[in-house]
Length: 286
Image (cartoon, rainbow, N blue to C red; front, side, top):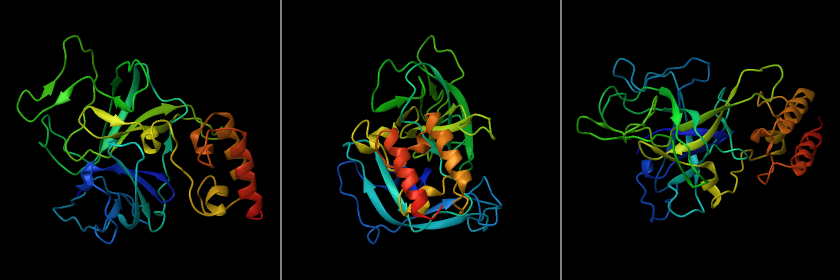
């Protein structure tokens, strides 16, 4: 039971179902039946490692691990996604925003990231190192639950990369243990003080060429509850542990930019999110 995963809320992790060794038709086990924990590359002191093994040692200490206290299944049958709830939020790790309002349909540059093998064939090459790559996602035509981030496929017999004729690169392909990893796209920043483009999650990797859209989490087009827990969780918009007027400004900037981080109530991104956020903020005495 291993693979990649993505932090999408303070204590929420999105992963692929099959990487947990659970068949698509099987009921999810309880955490008592299947104890799990998630390892983050960043340690609580801010140090980080891009390799699971350091000098052959998996227990090198440059990481933090958090126990899983609940597993939630998707409502969309066969979507191969599971949401994990952690016992606590990891220290110093900010959740990634999820792009639901403007999912890519046309040819778009995407970035994939995962902890899989780095070889030219499936399951080959150096393993368990963080890797990422940019490539062009082909025109999707129309909205489907599956996002085909690559027109090619990866096999285990050379030549391992199979592409239809006429494909123009660069293309990206996932490898073994990249399942549960991220397909990102860049969007304009909603923060005037940090104008660099921001990454948004548009898919969770399930094969070497395909991912499931975040909308799969709630029966095609629903929305994961990205901010879950207390009013303090919602009002602390920059997740620095302190709720101030800066959080209000950042929330409003994100809202007017159509940034899905401003979706604090789990429904459509609309004026109700403003009321929900302000209610949480003033409820915390801000």
